[in-house]
Length: 246
Image (cartoon, rainbow, N blue to C red):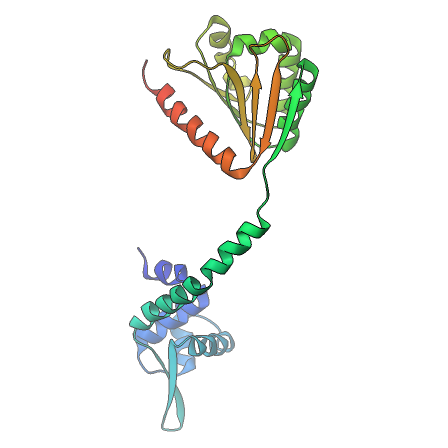
């Protein structure tokens, strides 16, 4: 890894990194010489040197009435890192306590019946995030109707919302996959050993779970980052598995 990248990852600005490396290479030198080496204006270098001095990475001494600046041993970078780590460990319990006190509780909303399920799906569009979905395509179309499903696809397309779809292989889903390129969709077929009994939409920081195998479909919309993350991880695992030759 490049020296500059490593130092900047420790929390130093690009100018601080340039000045420190220039001073380190030059040895004892004036601010003007460091500015020329670092290719940074002298006025900026003066300010940066002062900041590095505060951080213990630069020191000055007089030589023939000239102020000479010298970079501290690079081991000082490690010492500074350990000092910050020690300071963080001291306050970490308090930080964790603050997170507990101010944590946002998951929000859960329920939907019942076809019309309310359509309202839930409107949230999928309004959230304006790309979508990952696991569902059985045939019951989905049968329950909500071909006209509504086609209209939803059109509205999603107009909003440039991409969808990754995992579904069992059927005549309808095979025909659907043939239209992927024109409908901002990437369809993969689930392994025959995997059965999906509900419809699952993962988007934003939300998860929508809809039961289709009832006379009156029921949906649950959960807004929670942890639940969203877990469901997305499960989806990614099935996505990889479905990509393998069957």
